[in-house]
Each structure stands twice: as C-alpha cells, then as structure tokens.
Length: 149
Image 1 (cartoon, rainbow, N blue to C red):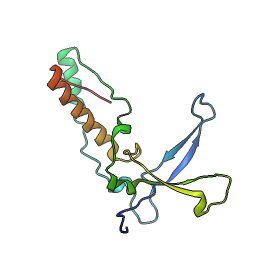
Image 2: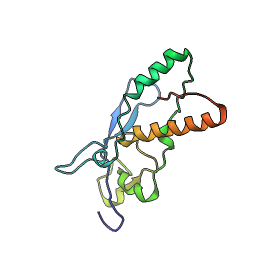
Image 3: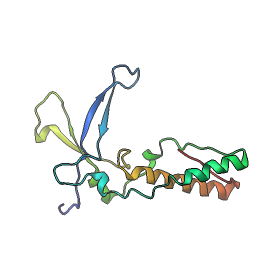
Image 4: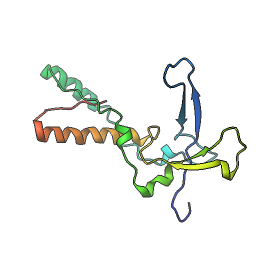
C-alpha cells in the first residue's frame, strides 16, 4: 500500500487452444492466486450471500404458473464498471514485446476498468444487475419474474 492506496497485480497466463477455429489464444487471470502468506484478490472481495436456496423458489414458480420469462443479460460482467479509486486493485503487468528481455522499458501496467470475471464478487454483482433489471421491467411492463443466468 502506498499513497495511491492498495495496488494488486493479478497473476495471469496464456491458454493455447489450437483446436479452436476463432480464438486460439486467450489470457487467463487468476484472482484466487496467493503469494506466500498473502491473501488473494478474491479473498478480500465481498463474495455476497449464497443464493442457491432461491433456486427452489424459482423452480416452484415455473411449476405454479406454467410459463415464465427467461432472460440472459449477455456479458453482464463487461458492463460492471469499477470506480476509478478501486482500479489499482486490478493491475496487470504486460510485456510490450514478448521476444525482448524483461525490463522497465518493455513492461506496461494495465488496470481493469470493469469487474474482472475471475473475481469472486463478480457473480454477486451480476446477480444484483439482474435484480435491478427485473425491477425496471416490473415497473414498466408488469412482468412477474425474471430468471437470469
């Protein structure tokens, strides 16, 4: 921690998928990685309540009404913006040129502007977005329930 607050660098590695047609290489971030006795990024994020018990109510809702509206808010996690002051907690070290040696001239620091999908709080944040969308729909259209995944 310094005058910029907490700074955390998320460990990451490449995932090669030669059998894929479109995306053969992607970056995987590990927000659960720990270094020595330190806590991971996921350890310090709010996990949110366990909502598994609500699935029973959703299943009963389907049985009682016989019809329901199902909605998948695509790429919700890409829409969850981080506050400017929280972005130092999601830094990534990136090599500008992978064939050159590691040096201060060859490294750039990126910060996430959105909640990373790999962080444990992402699921709770996505669920809250679905609840908020449901409230908006209920207010405007009188829809009884929104199920999202």
